[in-house]
Structure formats: structure tokens, C-alpha cells
Amino acid sequence: MTAGYRCDCKFGYTGRNCEIKVKTNNCENHQCSLGSTCVALSVGYRCDCSPGYTGTYCSTNNCANNQCVFGTCVALSVGYRCECNTGYNGIYCNTPINKCDNNQCKSGSTCVALTSGYRCECRAGYSGTYCNTRINNCDNNQCTSGSTCVALTSGYRCECNTGYNGIYCNTPINKCDNNQCKSGSTCVALTSGYRCECNTGYSGIYCNTRINNCDNNQCKSDSTCVALTSGYRCECNTGYSGTYCNTRINNCDINQCTSGSTCVSLTSGYRCECNTGYSGTYCNTRINNCDNNQCKSGRTCVSLTSGYRCQCNAGYSGTYCNTRINNCDNNQCTSGSTCVALTSGYRCECNTGYSGTYCNTRINNCDNNQCKSGSTCVALTSGYRCECNTGYSGTYCNTRINNCDNNQCKSGSTCVSLTSGYRCECTAGYSGTYCNTQINNCDNNQCKSGSTCVALTSGYRCRCNAGYSGLYCNTRINNCDNNQCASGSTCVNLSVGYRCECNAGYSGTYCTTPINPCDNNRCDSGSTCVALTSGYRCQCNTGYSGLYCNTRINNCDNNQCASGSTCYNPNSYFHRCQCNTGYSGTYCNTRINNCDNNQCASGSTCVNLSVGYRCVCVSGFYGTTCE
Image 1: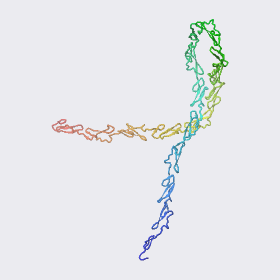
Image 2 (image 1 turned 90 degrees about the vertical axis):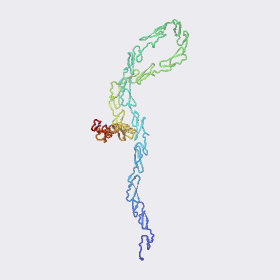
Image 3 (image 1 turned 30 degrees about the vertical axis):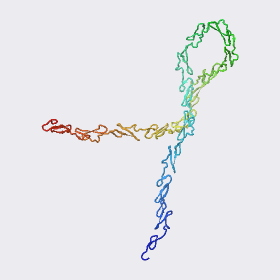
Image 4 (image 1 turned 60 degrees about the vertical axis):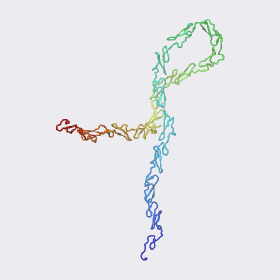
């Protein structure tokens, strides 16, 4: 030891007096973990840890026991944090994020959360990212016969026009299938139902009423009504004419009186009253100057007042008609007609069956014929005749030969009279000579949904219950598809139509009428009803209280009227105190001193009384006021 002392130097220093700093690297043999940084200190070293590691030597990993569920652990200087996977959040990334919380899905679609974002699952009938595009299922519809396509949530349905049915409205409905037309009438199918076209002589909805055309006839003047197949005619008595025999006949209307004579109508016929110079039934006989006349060539002598004149026949001329004129030379008469020379020109006398100036037009007597019941008109030389179809007779074939009078047709069938006998036309579902064998086309039918099978002449049809449609009634009709429910109400599909379930505060068929809670209020005593979001309240008039303002407020409760006074309510606003004798004031608490204005005289003493006062006189005075 050097004399005296020695110095024990601190690490990093040397020298006798430890004044020399030793240049060493304290990190050469450090124990810092991989990834951490060794920092040499004056004495020793320290380890600067990488993120996520702690401890003297940075050997502790903060993520070693992390609780991150759906995320990645990130070690921090102190502790750690969880970096969450897409779709999760929370301290430990264990809370799923609901991407549907603020979704824009429309039209009742369902939001489905995805790893990134969400998607909208559309209801039937909608499309688009947010299901806000209405799909028109009618774009390529197969509806026929002018029917209307109605788009449904799923698919579509065809609304048939009257007279058609079927899924696509392509089946015409024959309204005559089960008709009740009688008496050989014809069933005519209409847009709605059918009508029976009656044969002549029948009437009624089903042509089962025999017509007597003389009922309610208008024949007059005691004429006789004769019923015809179609209508009637009136047979007039002598002296009457007209459709209804109501015209008095003037037999002179078509008289043959000549030469200016006068016609006189008789009960039967008429007579001619001749002018001077004429005679004969029709006054056409001239008192004749033509005796010994010289008229020639088939002439007519016309007696004149003085002398006569010769009226020449066609083809003659001259004073005595003895000059022959032939106007038929070069005539144009055809069809074997005869030319007749006239005084001026000629005329063609046609053979039967021809007409026209030159007889070159063939007459068809059938042009305006009255043949009925599909009979055939046969033109004759003069007139025509009707060739009747089997089962008809009469001049115009309008009389039905009816073999059905005692028919045995059954089951509502129609008897059809034949030339020989008759046949039964069966209604749908029956067969046999007399239609007494029932046919059931509904065996093994495919009608669904409780529908009713209706047997037809050929096959069957399904009569659907309310709420169903389709050939077999297996399509459910959703009456809510085009509902008019308003105000956020809910449409409820019914068998027939639909109904709207209204939210609170609305009423009416379509929930369009706001409900006034005050309509049936119980507010009393003239109070005012105030409608609230839920229910109502009664705003009471002064002097009333309570839920319905039916409690009268007693203003005398807790009154300040002095003892002995009486409280009363003069009105609804306040109370009053009715004071006993000798008291006054609002609350009757002021004692009235009747001596204040007393008239006691002569030094007398006034004594206050309940009512008034009295004077106590001094000696020598008396009287009420001690005067």
C-alpha cells in the first residue's frame, strides 16, 4: 500500500486518486433481448425495448397472454392494444359490428351484414342495390282476350273481361250451358248471363208463357179481334175500316162517279147523282149525240152539248179516225212482249214475270216475301209460295208443328218437335232419350282450396271461393297488392277485399281520418276538452276541478271569516264573509261601535249594543237620548 491510503475506484475509473476515466463499452456483454437496443451508461447499461416488450432485459412480451378475440395484438410500452379485424370492434375485438344499423334497404327488404358493408335481400317483386326498383311482372304476361294484367308480389294474375275465365282468360264462358229457355226458344249468351229468344207466340224470361195476342187489343166499333201468330188483326163491322176499325168508311172515297156527278155515301156502297145531260150508274152515259156518228176504226164517239167528236183509238187520227198510224214500227219491246201503238208513241205489254218500259226486267216475286222460320221462297208466275222447313206449316211457314205437347223429357231438358215425334235436348250433366240419366263430370276433379266443381256439358269448371283464382282455384289472391291503406296502417288480406288496421290516432276505411280524442269526452261543467297525443284532458272553468271538472270548488274551504260569521260563495271566483250583527270588515273581524255617531246628550254615557246603542242618562235627565 502506498503510504497513507488507497482509493477504491467506481466502475469506469482508475488512477491513484480514481481521476482517470476508463474508456469501456458497457454494452459489450449486455443481456438485452433480441430486437431491443442496449444503451451504455456511466455505470452499466440499460435496454431500450422494442414495442411490445418490457422488463430489465426486454424479455417480457406484452402480447403473450393477450385477450384479443377477432383482432391482432399490438404490444405497447405498457400493456397492449387489439387491432380488430374487419367487422369487429371493442377493447378485445369481441363485439361484431352490425353493418345493417344504418342501412338503406327499402320496400321491406332484409339487410344482410357482410365482412365489408352489407347487402339488401329484396322481397319478391323488387330489385336494385337497395330494393327500391319495383319489378313489373306484367312485362311479358300471357293474358289474352283483352284481359288486364295485375302485377303481384310474386308473378302476376290476369283480370278477365266479362265472358272469359281461366289463368290467362283464354276460356270463353258459355252462359247458355245451364239455361232454362223453354218452348223451343233459342238461348243467346250475353256479356252477363243470357237471354231466351222466344218463338212466335211465346213470351216470358224463359219463353214459357203462351201469348194471347188479343189480350189488351185495341179493336174498336164492336169489331172482332183475331189472334195471329204474330200480333192480331181486327175484323171490322160494315161501315168501318182501319187497323183498329176506328175509321168510319166513306164509301165515296174511291167512287167511280164521272162527268162531274156527286157521290152520295150509303150504308153499303154509294150512288152517283148525275148532272144534266148524263145518266147511268156512274153518270157516264151521255145523253147521246153520237147516234148515227161517222167515227171509224174502232173510234169512240164523244157526245157534246152540240154534236159530237170522234176520240180516236191509239194508232188512228183524223176527224172520223179513219187514218191509220202505226207507232210500233221499229219498237224496242223485248221478252216476247206485245207492242201496242198509241196515239203518241207506243207501249210494251209485258208477259207475266217481266216489267219495265221495254219488258226487259225479270220480276222476282220473292223480293219482299213474308216467308218465316227459315222457309224457302219460290217465285211463281203470279206471286210466290213458301216451302216450309220440317216442323213448320202455314202459308208463310209461321205455324210450328208441335209434337212436344205430351213429351216425357226430364231433368229440365228442352223438347224439340220433329217432323215425326220429338227429341229431348238435355241440359248439362244429363243424357239418355228422355235426359233422365245424370252425367257427373266432376268425378276426379282437380278443384282446390275448397272450391266447388260445376259439371258442364263437356268437362267441368271450378267455382272459386272468395280469395282464390285460377283454373283450379289454387292461386291465392292477395287483395293487399294495390291497397289504399294510409297513415302507416297495416293492410290485412281478407277472403273478399282487404281491411286496414289503423295506427293509434286514425280511423276510417283507409285510416285517413285523424281521430279526435275529444269526440266522446266526459268533460263536465262547461269545461274545454283539449286533445292530447294519447287521450285528452279537461280544461276546467273557474270554480271547478277534478279529472272531468265535475267537482265544484268551495271557496269557503280554509276561509278567514272570523268566528261566528258565515262564509258563502257569491260566484266561482271568491268567497265572502256574512258578518253577525255588530261586526264588519272583509273577514268580519272589526267590531262595529254604534256609539261612534251617537246622539246621547247632557253628559250621558253611550253604551254600545249589538244593534244600535243606548244612552245612560245622568241624574236629572231622561229619554232615549237623555235630553
